[in-house]
Image 1 (cartoon, rainbow, N blue to C red):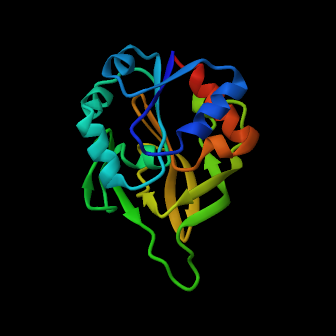
Image 2: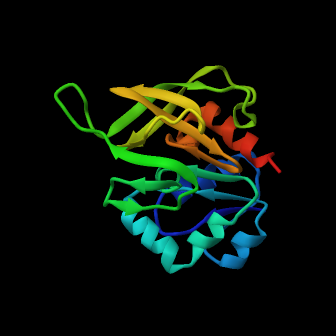
Image 3: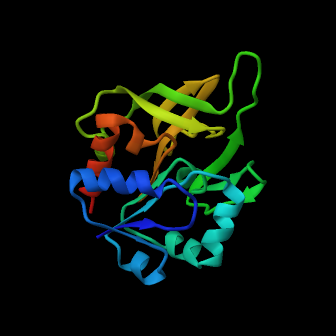
Length: 197
């Protein structure tokens, strides 16, 4: 069973919608036993890193996530709090992926948040991207980004600078963009994730 982690960080409904569309059964839960028993976990998220982390810690889910050994997917804020630290609220995060989440600095030529469709260069050798092209277009909404780190990056986007838009470290995968709002490309990624064991 796929479990969507319910930690009051928003955007769960759009993830549920795409799972409904592809016919994948799921459970929306914050019960630690459900997370432990899950075949795979999805950590969605829209909001602020600091309250998101506080909510996970309050529910005791941070430790369960840290010890999870099956496929795990973080989306948007869910990806950002997989890192060690976020500049958003100067927040210590889950530490699943080495690195820091940094804030885009707005300027006359750079609008923040980064919002809309943007190209992403994918490592198509990754099972998460099976059936996709090396360059695809996906939908972003974010004001913070992950420092580029070659060892964990499986997808790169440029917005003022190059940053990690898709990452993988052991069983933990993260997407900065919203696959559930990225049409057929995003749906393919979700389907590929669901097939992972």
